[in-house]
Length: 382
Image (cartoon, rainbow, N blue to C red; front, side):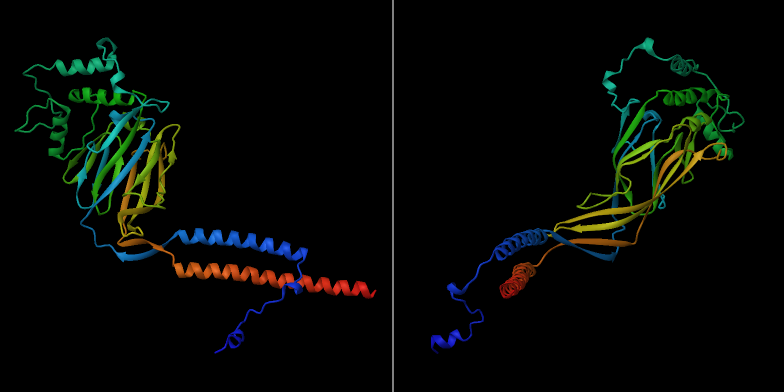
C-alpha cells in the first residue's frame, strides 16, 4: 500500500502556514484555556492521590473480646481523695475505685498541677479536725468494746469500727447511714469532710478494660462496696451537699483512634456554679474495624451519645449527684476500608479535561473570529 493511501486516513488535515491567521482574542483564549487545564489537572491529581472509604456492615461476633475505654476527665471542684471511679456491667462484673490503670492528678483551683513532693509534712501544720481524728483512733483501749447501736448479735457483741457497725446493720437487714451520733463513725465522717475541705480539683486519666456488654462507669459520692451482687454507695448528707459534679471531658474513647474518627464527648465542658446534680451520658458503642490500603487493620469502636442532667435542689431532693456514663453495644459492626482510585479512570479524566477544554476553546475562538469578520465586512460596505 502506497503512502498516498495512508494519507487518506488522516482525520487531522493540516493547513499551510501561510494561510493561518493568528488573532489577539485567539491568544487570550489559548492562555485562559491553558490556565484552566492546569487547575483542573492539579485538582484531578489531588483527587487521585486521595483514598476512597468503603463502609460495610456485619453482625458483630467478637463479644468474647474485651473493650478498652480511654478517659481523661477533670473535676475542678472535687479533690482526688474524694474521687473514686467505679464500674459495673450486666454480667455482674464490678470494678471499684479503679486505680491500677487510671491515675489521679491533684489540681489547684486555677487548674495547675499540685506536686505532692512539694507538700510540707509539718506536724504543727495538721488541721485541728484532722488532729482530732488521729487522736480518736489512738484513744481506744485494748479492751474497748463499742456499741453496735441495736445491731448486736450472739456472735457479735462489740462493734469497734464504723465498718463493723455497718455490717451488723446489714445482717439485720437495716438501713445504715453514718452519722456523728455513732461514735465509731466519727473519725470516718471527719475524714470524709476533710476530703471536701481541701478546695482542690482532680484530673482522672488512663484506661481500663471492660466486657463487651452493657454497663456503666461513674463517679459518685461516698464509699462504694458490694452487697448481694449489688453496688452500694454509702454517703453522708454532708457529702451529698458538697459533691460538685462540674467536669471537663478532655477525651473519651472506646478504643484506638483511627483516621477521621469523631468522639462526640471530646471537649465537653459542664460547670455548676452552685449546688450539684446528676449528669448522665447514654452512649451507644458501635464496633468498628478500620482497614488501611496496605491491609493493616485497627479493631476499635466509635460511639454516639445523648445527655441528661438533673439538678439537686428543693424540687429534686432525692437526686444523688454524680457523673454516670451508661454504655451499650450495637450488634452491628462497621468495616471501613481504604481503597485506591483507578489509574485508568485517572487517565480518562485527564484526557477528558484536556480535550474538552481545548475543544470548547476552539469553538469559542471560531465563533468570535467569524463574528468579527462579519462585523468587518459590514463596516467596509457601509
